[in-house]
Length: 68
Image 1 (tube, rainbow, N blue to C red):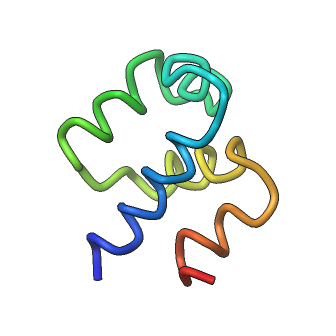
Image 2 (cartoon, rainbow, N blue to C red; image 1 turned 180 degrees about the vertical axis):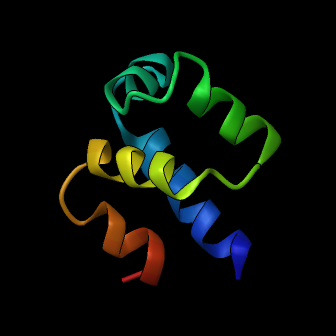
């Protein structure tokens, strides 16, 4: 199950026109957060995930969690 949501999160990040650094900074997660998240496939803290999903836009949270 973990791989499913993580794969959907990665899909949204890669589709975003911003750089990994810009997405990380916009989410207030530190400049290398997204790069490390994708490289190491670690689970982010809930607060980080929430800010990242908010940064990725409307519907990102629902899509990542449910796949719909």
